[in-house]
Amino acid sequence: MINLNAGRVSALFLSALLGAGCGGEEAVEEPQNADGSTTFKVRLENVARFNQLKSGVYNTRVGGTAPGPLAPGEAYEFSFTAGRGQKLSFASMLGQSNDWIFATPPGGIELYENGYPISKDVTSSISLWDVGTEADEEPGVGAHTGPNQASSIDGPGAPDSDPSVRRVMPLTRLANGTSFNVPPVASMIKVSVHSDVLSRRFTVRIENVANDSSTLQTSRGARPVRISPGVWALATSGEPLFTEGKADRGLGLEAIAESGAVTQLASELTSGTGAATPLSPGVFVVHRAAGPMYRLGEADRGMGLERIAEEGNPATLAQALSEFLPVGTKSGTFTAPDGDYGTMPLTPGLAYSFEVKAFPGDRLSLVTMYGMSNDWFFGTAPEGIALFDAAGMPLTGDATAMIHLYDLGSELSEEPGVGANIAPQQPAPNTGAADTDNKVREVSSSVYGTPVPRHLKLTISR
Image (cartoon, helix red, strand yellow):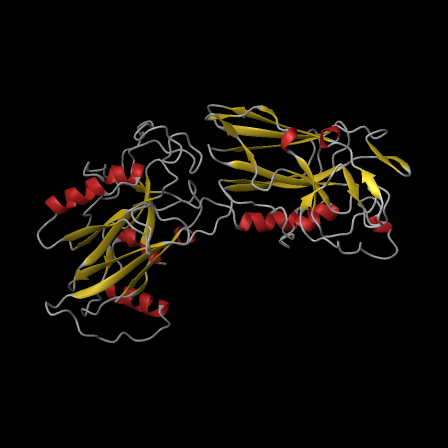
């Protein structure tokens, strides 16, 4: 493992590492520029593959000690923090069905109204959905519905002739051609959201409000209503659990819809959960002396790095560097993703590219904002990345390991993606409280556990 903070990585060792990253081929000297310099191509990609900011499971009733379904009068509760623009999705099985779920709309429920977190009954936003994986039988009566499938003598239910996820209508047609009067959703389930404005913490309560002797009437009399454990997700966009009119994705929703089993979908959600933060336009420097933009353990120099770390604006730092860097040191900006985009933040799937000219002994440093933060930025160690080995050979390859996540120390850090004063949430620039520690430092894994390579990839080529 390379520790650039120590500043003792030999160029030869780096050369070997980068060579290994390129398939182990030996470097071949190629013609340089007429002035003896080498032109390097630098590519910074946002490789985040996070589909939702948060996710989780609810499976134990309030006051209970073990996972299980809800009977009338019982409730699940779960809590999370969330920011403006983030929506809640969840799904639980109606236990008496073949493959019906209580769920939010595909895109989720808005948690803020007019800029304030909601505290209200949201049952009207909940629907009963047919996941389309198994043919529909009379709830609580059919041989392959939840209460009876374990004793079915002919195995699992038949495939649904319509595999699309769709809303269950009040009068729904079953696979045998008969119709069934589905109870109103609000007669079976109540969902409420309560919030704390200051902490941005939300608590969701899912209650079984059915009456087992009257709510679910069938050809064989009343049947009990049970609500299964479920999964939830918090996302800023997209449809985390399903898409109306499309087939189930095969990621585990079927297991919830048919048996109330949450493990598979919960695992799938976990693998795609995290902050898909944009990366801001940034600044690069080709230099020799260490620390052209910052040093660890020292306060920000007031040259404009704060504007990048808090707002993603590289202009002030770029101007300062062009005026005050030593002769022979070169700097510039990267602002527009590859393609016809213009100046904009780097969202997942896009890349910034730029070229630098360097001579043996030169190093490369760069900075770009972690967009969902107060004042965090991705950057090289203060020493920068060596562009040549000890023999003057250019170094190329995957240099992602040379990038770190730093806290500038200018603004008190809040939860990424959620805090009221992080870049996407704050009402105006520079509105957060001052940090109690004004020193530039690396963000520890105990503060933020997502490794840098899950966010970005840095490649240097010729």
